[in-house]
Amino acid sequence: MPSQTRGVGPGWGVGSPQTCGGWEAFLTCLIPRTDLRQMFQTRSVENIQFLPFLTTDVNNLSWLSYGCLKQDWTLITVNTIGAALQTLYILVYFYFSPEKRRVLLQSVALLGVLILGYCYFNLLIPDVAVRLARLGLFCSVFTISMYLSPLADLAKIIRTRSTRCLSFPLTVATFLASASWTLYGFQLSDLYIMVPNIPGIVTSILRFWLFWQFPPDQDKLYKPLQA
Image (tube, rainbow, N blue to C red; front, side):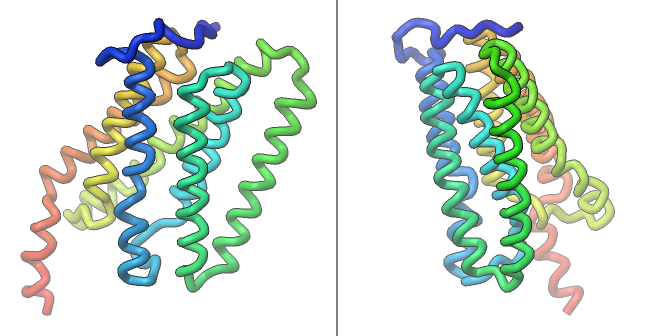
């Protein structure tokens, strides 16, 4: 079972857990900022997917629960900020979306999953150590599935030779956040934090390769030919 150490010393050195946590909080604020700006500028949600906002919010709330149970203030702080921001993005998306019923139904469905999860972990598992282990496993599996889900668009990108459906700022932020969390988990000897973020690094590198193979400027070159 992974160590339940709360920290590795009080310092704020370059490689300290506190420094990693600061980077994670900073990156949490930056990751969806481009989409938020686009929604306000265009007053629409065109070419912006709703599900990533929703799943990221659930992911943040799950890790927040893990951090509270483990009494890890880095996890608590970063995921509190992340959950608050993701909730804001969900509300903005709902406001500008023409398909409010679909957005609302998806939100209610995942809210129900959260309530069931809370009841399971807090009412059916009285042993704190077992609860921490199972909650950590759930968070790890959920995080891995989030990182791997964009691979479903891989065939479409290769077929169309276009990366328009990918966000380069999001890819950069995801890579840095995944690397920071992996380092943080390594320093705390917490496999539940370290292991699920490794796929985030791998998938980000894959997306960098796609941007290199099919640069966004290439799409602009095709537009006059299609007109």
